[in-house]
Length: 254
Image (cartoon, rainbow, N blue to C red; front, side, top):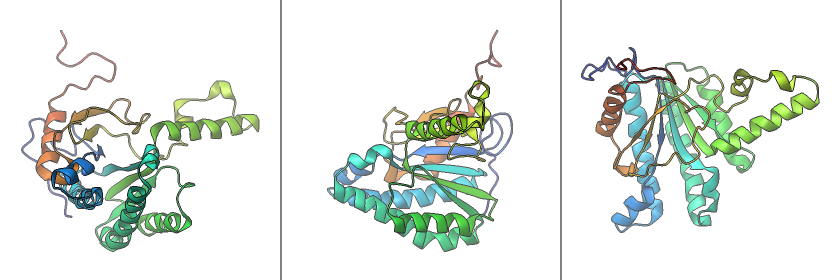
């Protein structure tokens, strides 16, 4: 995955400039509907979704991004049928086992965000191994949100701050946003400028609620297993046409 410059976007490149991008997050939606449309079991849709994730990682790196976050398994997904949950857990195991050597060679750092306490010990060990073996890579970060929920993350931060306050480590009246950010799963990772959701649904689904407070959202009609570089480029092009105000007055305001 060799980084390539982007020259055909209307305002700068995907990796720099006033409307440039460094971090994109994706809500990968539509595996089940893709499988149903093909007359296949849902597991087949999830397997094809992994292939789309591989394409997304490659495209993100080639487009000059430095961070990509993929929403793989939410805290609400435990409510799915037990067999489907097992399939999703197995896919994460296979993805790490099969892709880790290549990711290491290509300078990709792997991070897993989410609550790990509910995962089985074998999977926790595998996740820790992936992070440890790629921890020295700095050219590109792949962040996988697995057993992740934005509300759950904020609750865990609140509990941690409450403990520190009760122990006298911090003054509750002086808690600032920076204190919260230091306890988020994404500590040290820049906030995403762009969040993409596939499948045509227009929801944020409890994803990066703190981090994406000022992100732009692009909703694509494509089902996740069909997602490729052309869809990635379409989303970036739409992002770069927007006027990001961050609560202020836009450049085109009178």
